[in-house]
Image (cartoon, rainbow, N blue to C red):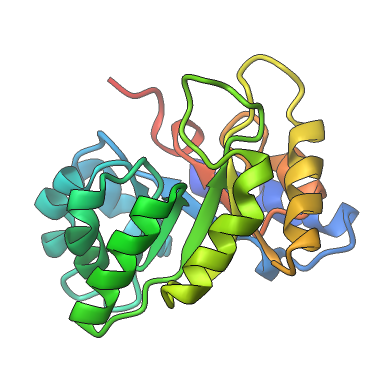
Length: 220
């Protein structure tokens, strides 16, 4: 078997191997290349290599980079993985194909109005503050069900749940907890796992992993 020769090939191989161990299909896991802070010159080679899902943290940065990058690639998918201000909801709905940071009622309302006005439904993940960390965004665990109900009322489509576990501790218990919360609420998709722990996330049911530094190298 040929050894992977690029970071993308290596990550894809590791996802496939882990999925096989977990009894899952590799096709059940979407690799999102986190391209925040990276210039178009660093992103284009991954597009040429066949990567189609990318993640950005900021609406303004994505607006500057992606219209040109998307030319000739109608199948590119752009995911917003950073916190979203309610006043940027319309811009986000216009630009992104998926939003991973739905975390509060005011944002549900803003996105519902923006989607209705644009005539465009953008699927979302509810970001859960899985470690109850004051400095992090995310919906408190106890409020997830209420936020999902509000999203249904606002006709904001929710695919599943997203989390960022606390740093420098074992991520597995937090991924398992997110999976349980999703199952309890009838949600099948899980956005969890980054460069350092995506294999653990795949073992525990991640459908979307968000990998940046392992693909692009350390950010400036």
